[in-house]
Image (cartoon, rainbow over all chains, first blue to last red; front, top):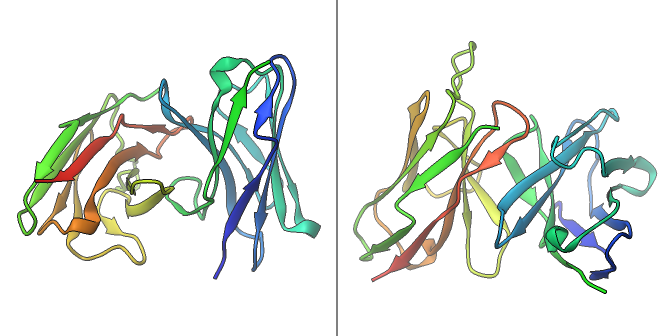
Length: 117
Length: 112
C-alpha cells in the first residue's frame, strides 16, 4: 500500500529557506500530481502547489515568488523549498497525491514546521 | 481566489441520526464539461484529511456509502445518512476548478 512520508527540520529561522521532502513508499510517481498543502490556525488549509510526474509545476500565486516544488524520480521523492520564511509560514505541511490536480486521495501524516529565532 | 463558505461551523449530532453540511462558493464550480469540481474531506482528530467525495457527488474509494454529496454551481451539500461515532472530526469542502484550489473553513462534527 502506497504511503507518503514528509521529512523536514521542524524549526526554521526567519529569513531562511524551508526544505521539505516527501517520500513515496512504493509504486511509481508517474501519472500523478504531487502536491504540498499546509494548515495553520490562522489560514486553515492552504494549497501551496504541485509538480506533475512529467515535471510541470503550478504554484499558489500568494507564494509563487518564494516556492519551488521539484521531483526526484530516481528516489521516488518530491520536495518543497520555501525561501525567506516568516512566522506566518509556521504550519503543518502535508504532501498529497492526485490523479487530476484536485481530489487528493493520499496524504502524508504531516510535519509541523515552526519559524522562530 | 474563489472563497468557500461552509455552514454550520459546529454540528452536534446524535448517533444514528442524519447530518448535513453546506458549502457555498463565490464562483460557479460547474465546468463546461458538466462536472462540478468540488471535493469533501474529513479530518479526524490527530489525522490528516481524507478524501470522501470528489466532483461533488462521486464517493472516493473506501469512503462509506452513508456519505453522499450533491449540488451544482455554487451550492453544495454533504449528507451523512446515519452518523456513527467514527465520523467525528472536521469536514472541509475544496474547490478544484481553478488554481489556487481553496478550502472552506471547516465544520466540526461532534457526537451529542
